[in-house]
Length: 469
Ligand code: GLN
Ligand code: MG
Ligand code: MG
Image (cartoon, rainbow, N blue to C red; front, side):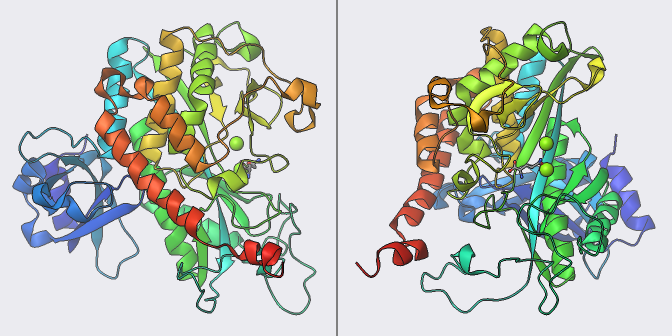
C-alpha cells in the first residue's frame, strides 16, 4: 500500500520537482499534465485534479467538459526521461458532480471488469500477460507526402531492409525478411537499445524478464512479466512510452503499428490470461491440455465474441493487414495447444499454476484497458453460459484444405467489419454495467472516423495498380 503521505515523503526526500498526472484516452494514447510540487498536497490526492476533458477525442462535449483526474497512489513511479526530477502517477477519470468513474474512462472500465468477475464468484484475481512487439526504424524523415498524413504511405518503397539494421555499404550482417528470430550480434544490432529499455523500465517499477529480436527485420519484443489486469494495462502504457522514448534517444523511431512492412511478419500483442480464486488457478483441470472445463468455456466465449472483440483488440485499419495467413498471426477462430496459427493457444506447461490461454489476435494499437476488459467479459460470458468451444484444432491451420476451412469462423477482415460486429454484439460487455452502451457507441463513432478517412484516401498502391489505365 502506497499512501498519499508516502508519496509526499518521497517528494521531500528526493527533492522531486514535478508530479506528472497521467491517464489514457479511448484510443489508448497516454495523456499528461504536469503539477509543480508546490501544489501537490494531501488535498490533491483526496480531491483529484480538475481538467478540461472536452478536447480529448471521444470524450465530453464542450458544455460539460470539466472532469476530475483522481491519482491512484499505487501507481506512482519515477519518470527518468526528464531533466528535472519527476514522479508520474496513473489516474482514474471521475465525474465532478457524482464522483463516480466517468463512463468513457478506459481505466475505470478495467477496474469495473475486475470487480464484476470478483462479485460473480468466478474468481478474485485476473492475471494478464501481454507480449507487445514493435519495429524500430532509423529516424529518416521522408519528404512531405501528398495526403499530409505525416508518414510515407508505401512501405514497399522503403529500403528492403528498413530499420535499425539498415546501413549502406556491406549489408552482410543484417536479418533478412522473416530472418530476425534470433541470431546474435552483429546481425542483431539493437542489443544495447533493448537492454536500456529494460533497465529504464525496472527503474520505473515495471518488471521485464527478457528481450529479443523478433522474426521480422527490425522487429523486437520485451517480455513483460504477468500481473493483475489493470496493473498490467498501466504497465503496458509505461512499456510503450519507454520503447518510444529510448528509441528516440538512440536517434531511432519505434512503432507499434501492426503491419508496417509489406511481406514480413507483423506486430502482435498476444495476451496470456487466467483467472484465480482463493489462491488457486481455476484454468487447470483434466480436460484438453490440462485445462479446466471453465477455461474451455472461457475460450468458447472469446471465440463466440471474437469479431466484436476485434474492435477493441485490433482497433486500427492497419490491424487487418496483419491478420492474414503466413505470418504467425491468426485468422481462424480455433484453439490449440500445438500450433501458433490458432487464435487461442494453450502454452505448454505441466504445472497447474501455469495454465492459461494465449489470445493471439490482439495487436498493440489496442487500448490495453479496453482490450483486456473486453476479452475478460467475453471469456466470463462463456463461463456463465457454458459456451463450449468444440474440439481443438491441432493441425497447421494455414495448410488446411478448403473443405475443412469452410466451417471454421474467422476474425474480422477489416475495422469496418469489427465495428459492425461490435454494434450487433455488445451485451456481453455491458453485463454488470462494466461497459456502458453510450461508451461503446462513442467508441464506434470515433473509430468509424478512422475507417472513413482511410477509405476515402487514394492509396499509393492504387496509383501503382490503376494510374495508367
Ligand atoms: N509477430 C507475430 C504476430 O503477428 C508473432 C510472432 C511470435 O511471437 N512468435 O502475432
Ligand atoms: Mg513475439
Ligand atoms: Mg506469444
